[in-house]
Length: 82
Image (cartoon, rainbow, N blue to C red; front, side):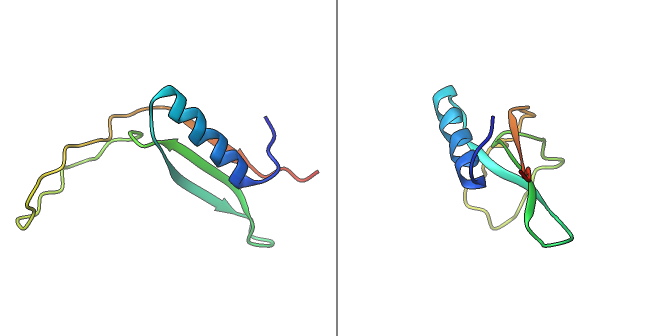
């Protein structure tokens, strides 16, 4: 599938995720060394990956549950020069 801009691709995936019942987050990006433009961007499910150890802080009032469960939903957006 081709998109005119990176923003349109991200917005498509966010709408897709909403229909199928999950949330997204921007994961990573790669820039070209020649001109600094973003050439690759990953948009993943917000439950992608695992947290190695729970973060425990003594001054926390409310402990948050661990949300990362290893979901594999992702889209890779790549800049293609025409």
